[in-house]
Image (tube, helix red, strand yellow):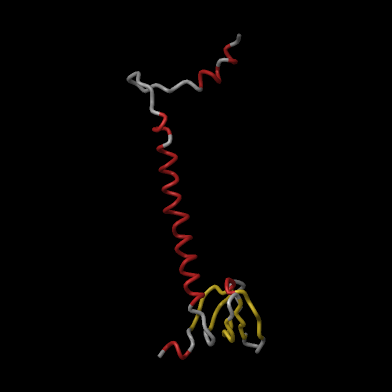
Length: 114
């Protein structure tokens, strides 16, 4: 039996600390848990917050609002349906988009300002 065949078995042995005690298997998961918490606060949570604000903005969408779509088209909302929005552009062209395609409301309608 060669030393190379024993290497995987030795690698699976519990690690010992400097004072001779074996390290807890739970202690090896602490860095992984900390990494997951950092990812939550840096990546996932802000994305969920932004999605919630976008959904709230879409519920407030009404006829007369000036909007910008995800593709950069600027226009005025003519009609709002359950899942679609009709937008009139500068050239009097009416386009129908899904609500999710609306990126932001640039200006509210005149009735909402008073």
